[in-house]
Image (cartoon, rainbow, N blue to C red; front, side, top):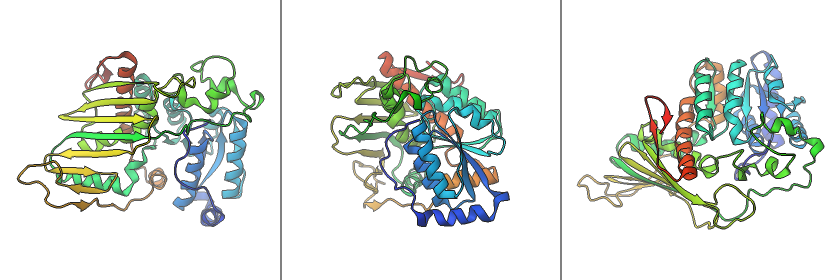
Length: 399
């Protein structure tokens, strides 16, 4: 299943694959055997990160409804590990394989919760891509399903394994900029990076019934829904899930407040009149405990990004890696600008694999995934209804 286009990272080289292939051959009894569900661009990054982790782990089975993606990823995996993985079109067939310890889920957004719930019920540990969910009922279902098990679950919010974001968390938690009452985040670009080549998408190569996911995706075979699923309401809640989840995940982490009090959103399709059903301009205001967090995104102008945390004693600028006294008149404000500390950390994939062995809680836990899903779903519902959306922390319900 196809994913958001890759924006960074390079793919495997023979030099990178050699050490992992050697370890895989030397210690078969201690090997973590992985299944890959979804074989689009993000799964390619999973494979790269797995190789770089130097862990004794290998992907032994792949699943994708589209034959072209599935066979391409299988070929990449055979090159990396020296053995061809099994191939299936339906994820239940992969979950039924007794020799798989854990799965990597990289499918369209709306499928994440159900596949996660089915995977942990099958006794598999899981690395599941962000967003955790795009529908609140699905988010709650998947979170509760994981809580009923002892499975290890890592959510793919990788900023939790990025040195500068760990440094920012440390600075805020240590009170360097004082009490934070406002946060401004924005992401902007103008190129139509969601567009895909559809000429090689043939009906006979796609298990369309499986892609429809129990009837949640309607209508006859449609190459755009398969390859450009980011544009359609059946498969995503739009910018809230596709992009906001990356940064709103920082709010509960940095503010140490798990859930928003309320959210309000505006947006629409203002420029890209190409049949898309999801916004190309989006602005959400999410209220935490005595702090307003705004997330804005434009697909219509690419004039830079912002990630600013405004405190009583100064301002933290994550994009420019600086901490300063800018904007503060507090007598204890910062008097000099300093660089943001980068905290050394293992990769997100390496952290997951280590936790599979040790049974520790990964750096981006299922609780963290549920938290960013709550914020994203609140913002998406507000956009859809035109109303302010709140959250009842006791009943765990949107209001």
